[in-house]
Image (cartoon, rainbow, N blue to C red; front, top):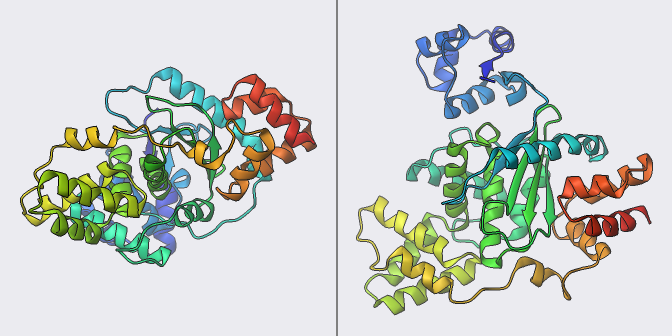
Length: 373
């Protein structure tokens, strides 16, 4: 169904603040006529304007926008070139979202001050500002290595529940799944641990961008911004500048060695460093480093690389108790704590566990047994 503004909610907040349409337009950065068109239902705000409108009025997305069904889960798969998210994928994920609803009352009832990026823009300067503000809130400088603990802590503070899963190696988009429940104002982020370590931090930062920009979740604009924000957050302008100045003028083997060293230092992929250095050079009007994207991919793909699951669990696969323990301790996830309460208090069976985790029945039985013990 088409989205529309909840005019009564907007008008009520304007009246409460004593704002005219002109004043609201000034706050959002649009013309008075644009606001008039919104309030008469002639037009709907673009994503950037919608986020600014939500912040200006102090209204959450679900109170500001009528989607036709406020209970319908919002789904976002990470976009990957050459792959397509089918109706089957979306339908299955929405089904998981509806099944997650009974877990929400069992999660900690915390309503922290959420972080919102009100002007999600892939333009270099705007992206740099967003990254500077985010890192400042995290208490780290622009040259500092962004740790997993910094990233993971942000999900907890923004009512987003990380759900680490063992889905095996995937070649498509299914390695990360974002399910937002607008009515409950909670987001579940599934992260596949069977992926390369060097890619994992990027994926977490990508999903964090979705949490910061809830209106863009499930849209192409949201995917583009999340990818751009993740790269810039993990390897900011200052790091890219330093890497460029150190690598420029070196033969190809030397510059690749330089970029690889920065990638290892920041625990990200060589491609992430290369792309951020390339964006820095383009923005600064400098010559690009003489190395093609395909060469970078060839270098990074020479070794298969350890997976997150292999780093966390020895031996593989882990037993259910170890898996649940790591989810709670390493990822600060309340998911299995809430699921355990559901299993014990409502006598929920292994079939439910299988559906909300999307795992084989054999694995769900083991997990259910561990939770019920």
